Image (cartoon, rainbow, N blue to C red; front, side, top):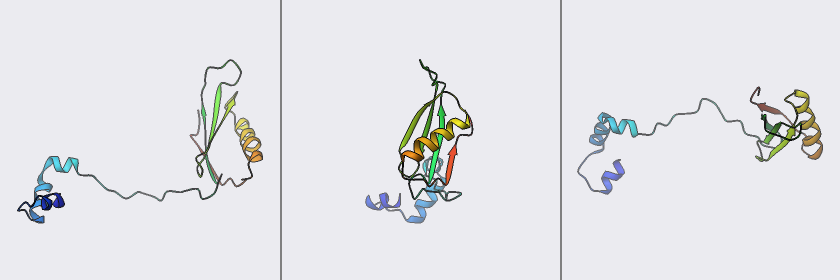
Length: 118
């Protein structure tokens, strides 16, 4: 606001501008609030170091595969999607270890996160 008033060459001081904007209800509602985050964001620094998994479904299907297992690598943001017949942990392990780990040279899996249920 101070820069705008100075660019228009208006006869107001910085103190007057701060007093006016502090007492203005509209200015208080519009003013952006900057706050610090509560923690530090954890970022993946290598492929398949952190992955996110989730199920989508039940979906309409002509086969037994009514669910879709989605796996996203946080480093590359590359998505994998596999049709599944159920939501069991064995299904996740089968796709995770045999489809992704065997077909990729990256075998470092430090953190897996998901939505904790269907």
